[in-house]
Image (cartoon, rainbow, N blue to C red; front, side, top):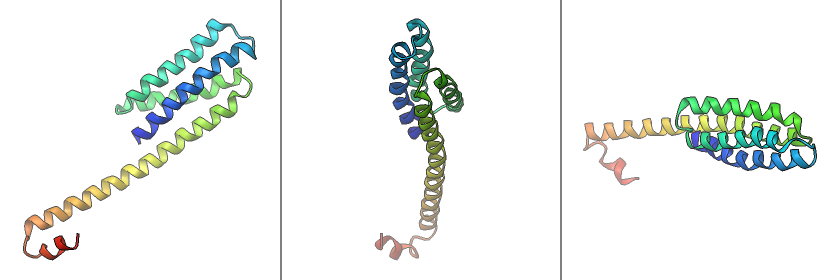
Length: 131
Protein backbone atom coordinates (compact mmCIF):
# COMPACT_ATOMS: atom_id res chain seq x y z
CA UNK A 1 0.00 0.00 0.00
CA UNK A 2 2.80 2.39 0.85
CA UNK A 3 4.39 2.11 -2.59
CA UNK A 4 1.13 2.92 -4.37
CA UNK A 5 0.53 5.89 -2.09
CA UNK A 6 4.06 7.17 -2.68
CA UNK A 7 3.60 7.03 -6.44
CA UNK A 8 0.29 8.89 -6.25
CA UNK A 9 1.91 11.58 -4.10
CA UNK A 10 4.74 12.04 -6.61
CA UNK A 11 2.25 12.57 -9.42
CA UNK A 12 0.36 15.00 -7.21
CA UNK A 13 3.54 17.06 -6.80
CA UNK A 14 3.48 17.72 -10.54
CA UNK A 15 -0.22 18.53 -10.65
CA UNK A 16 -0.16 20.73 -7.56
CA UNK A 17 2.83 22.59 -9.00
CA UNK A 18 0.85 23.27 -12.16
CA UNK A 19 -1.91 24.89 -10.11
CA UNK A 20 0.44 27.82 -9.43
CA UNK A 21 0.74 29.27 -12.96
CA UNK A 22 -2.94 28.60 -13.63
CA UNK A 23 -3.95 30.48 -10.48
CA UNK A 24 -1.68 33.39 -11.36
CA UNK A 25 -2.61 33.74 -15.03
CA UNK A 26 -6.29 32.77 -15.08
CA UNK A 27 -7.48 33.77 -11.64
CA UNK A 28 -5.22 36.81 -11.16
CA UNK A 29 -3.99 35.50 -7.81
CA UNK A 30 -0.96 37.07 -6.17
CA UNK A 31 2.12 35.02 -7.17
CA UNK A 32 3.42 34.93 -3.60
CA UNK A 33 0.10 33.58 -2.32
CA UNK A 34 -0.22 30.98 -5.08
CA UNK A 35 3.42 29.92 -4.76
CA UNK A 36 3.22 29.72 -0.99
CA UNK A 37 -0.04 27.81 -0.92
CA UNK A 38 0.45 25.24 -3.68
CA UNK A 39 4.24 25.31 -3.59
CA UNK A 40 4.08 24.36 0.08
CA UNK A 41 1.57 21.63 -0.66
CA UNK A 42 3.75 20.28 -3.48
CA UNK A 43 6.81 20.25 -1.21
CA UNK A 44 4.80 18.50 1.51
CA UNK A 45 3.59 15.89 -0.99
CA UNK A 46 7.16 15.25 -2.11
CA UNK A 47 8.43 14.84 1.44
CA UNK A 48 5.47 12.66 2.44
CA UNK A 49 5.97 10.43 -0.59
CA UNK A 50 9.38 9.49 0.77
CA UNK A 51 8.10 8.98 4.30
CA UNK A 52 5.16 6.67 3.58
CA UNK A 53 6.77 3.85 5.56
CA UNK A 54 5.75 5.71 8.72
CA UNK A 55 2.15 5.60 9.88
CA UNK A 56 2.06 9.29 10.80
CA UNK A 57 3.16 10.26 7.28
CA UNK A 58 0.32 8.23 5.81
CA UNK A 59 -2.19 10.12 7.96
CA UNK A 60 -0.52 13.42 7.09
CA UNK A 61 -0.96 12.53 3.42
CA UNK A 62 -4.68 12.05 4.10
CA UNK A 63 -4.71 15.61 5.48
CA UNK A 64 -2.88 16.76 2.36
CA UNK A 65 -5.60 15.19 0.21
CA UNK A 66 -8.22 17.15 2.14
CA UNK A 67 -6.23 20.37 1.74
CA UNK A 68 -5.89 19.74 -1.98
CA UNK A 69 -9.62 19.25 -2.28
CA UNK A 70 -10.47 22.41 -0.32
CA UNK A 71 -7.94 24.68 -2.05
CA UNK A 72 -9.02 23.51 -5.49
CA UNK A 73 -12.08 25.75 -5.18
CA UNK A 74 -9.76 28.74 -5.64
CA UNK A 75 -8.81 27.80 -9.21
CA UNK A 76 -11.33 27.09 -11.93
CA UNK A 77 -11.01 23.56 -13.27
CA UNK A 78 -8.83 22.42 -10.39
CA UNK A 79 -11.72 20.79 -8.57
CA UNK A 80 -12.00 18.11 -11.23
CA UNK A 81 -8.28 17.36 -11.02
CA UNK A 82 -8.41 17.29 -7.22
CA UNK A 83 -11.37 14.90 -7.21
CA UNK A 84 -9.51 12.59 -9.61
CA UNK A 85 -6.41 12.51 -7.43
CA UNK A 86 -8.32 12.08 -4.18
CA UNK A 87 -10.18 9.21 -5.85
CA UNK A 88 -6.86 7.70 -6.93
CA UNK A 89 -5.60 8.05 -3.37
CA UNK A 90 -8.62 6.29 -1.87
CA UNK A 91 -8.49 3.54 -4.50
CA UNK A 92 -4.75 3.12 -3.92
CA UNK A 93 -5.27 2.74 -0.19
CA UNK A 94 -8.07 0.19 -0.62
CA UNK A 95 -6.29 -1.86 -3.27
CA UNK A 96 -2.99 -1.59 -1.43
CA UNK A 97 -4.50 -2.98 1.75
CA UNK A 98 -5.99 -5.89 -0.18
CA UNK A 99 -2.63 -6.59 -1.78
CA UNK A 100 -0.88 -6.45 1.59
CA UNK A 101 -3.41 -8.90 3.04
CA UNK A 102 -2.90 -11.31 0.11
CA UNK A 103 0.88 -11.11 0.49
CA UNK A 104 0.63 -11.82 4.21
CA UNK A 105 -1.64 -14.81 3.60
CA UNK A 106 0.73 -16.17 0.95
CA UNK A 107 3.71 -15.68 3.26
CA UNK A 108 1.91 -17.46 6.12
CA UNK A 109 0.99 -20.34 3.81
CA UNK A 110 4.59 -20.67 2.62
CA UNK A 111 5.90 -20.64 6.19
CA UNK A 112 3.39 -23.33 7.17
CA UNK A 113 4.55 -25.51 4.27
CA UNK A 114 8.19 -25.00 5.26
CA UNK A 115 7.37 -25.94 8.85
CA UNK A 116 5.63 -29.10 7.63
CA UNK A 117 8.61 -30.04 5.48
CA UNK A 118 11.00 -29.50 8.39
CA UNK A 119 8.86 -31.64 10.70
CA UNK A 120 8.54 -34.65 8.36
CA UNK A 121 11.08 -34.56 5.50
CA UNK A 122 10.23 -38.07 4.22
CA UNK A 123 6.50 -37.45 3.82
CA UNK A 124 7.03 -34.15 2.05
CA UNK A 125 9.62 -35.45 -0.46
CA UNK A 126 7.07 -36.01 -3.28
CA UNK A 127 5.62 -32.53 -2.75
CA UNK A 128 9.06 -31.01 -3.35
CA UNK A 129 9.28 -32.76 -6.69
CA UNK A 130 6.03 -31.24 -7.93
CA UNK A 131 7.19 -27.68 -7.38
